[in-house]
Image 1: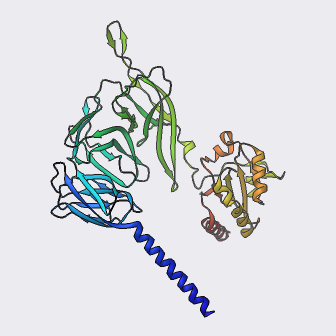
Image 2: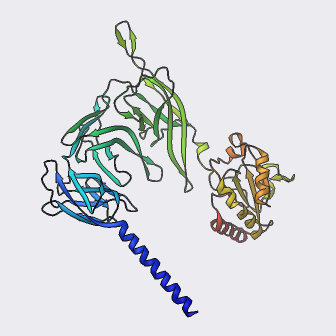
Image 3: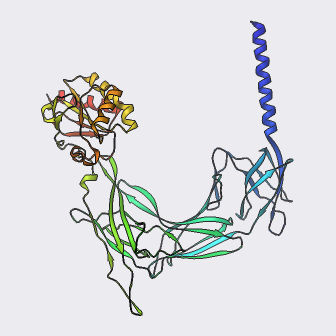
Length: 478
């Protein structure tokens, strides 16, 4: 026995020694130099070896995340040494004391990484306009596209009173410039959306001049209101060109525009510089009620008309005005404390079910589909819930929204579901789904002993604890 332990120990030691030797062979100490375009050495440059578990983050020339990366600093002759450098091609990021940067790949051979050249920085200057008016306080971002997922390099600017923005000290290469807008959401949440974007190829020592907007193209305006004609604030309105539009005259060059705006407090919006064509207008906004959030989505078709040519002159078309009225009710969850919509019908086992006949009990409704993976994994939990409280106190009803009842029966059979089941599909046309405003599954509703909606979308132990609280309240009332 002792001899076997000794042999195992020797084998383990040999394996560890072999792993250390293999690791040392796979990594090495390598040297290189950093120079400027005129071949002069670049002292004091920080060189990062990229390729760790997280990318290197550089925002507005500030290193955001770099603790995980090996690094070195060049000496007076621009020389540097990095340890544990893997064989083959590696990626390096270098930055001098003037925030001039370089991103490059090198092939490590014979402990040499060759030479890194820091080129003159590139620059961008531009102006943002809506029609002929400058846009003040607009957020503009340029993001480097050549980071090989190892480098996140970007700069952000805000337009001044004249709509002007500028970026300096950029690595030469490919970028995407984006104009973004913070969309206010209900509950003090914000969502950042892109309203314009433009690909850029930047060259060292040169400044790219660009203009966003300010064309003679038409614009769209209107109001987004609810069914009571009250303005909806914070709605993101976005135009998407329709394919094969006969009116489309999109320019082959220029900014790749995401035509969009965010509605003001009175619901008004304006989208500028839209080429004539056929579009799908989509509206989004986060809604909240009862600490429960969901997203409003509405779609309308829009046709944008440009000037009409008559003889040798261009005459303007009527203004492109498009108002949208949205009924919020289908997007909002049912209100707590209000009576639950009625439910009646034949269960899959042939029995009749009527929600109104179960007053005095807590009723749990579980809306689900067979194609929902989360529904399948939680199916048995509702049987356990019914077993725990008993039919005299709690009624659990599964409501299936499949498009075909045969899929529903197969699902129930495979999952061996025991609690009562009601087929209320198909999903698109289900009156019960619409009455309970179910927009995704699984969704649960807890109906209290007097028939009011008490809670929405609680599961597991949270659901059990809530039912216990309702039962305790019922006992105290009695």
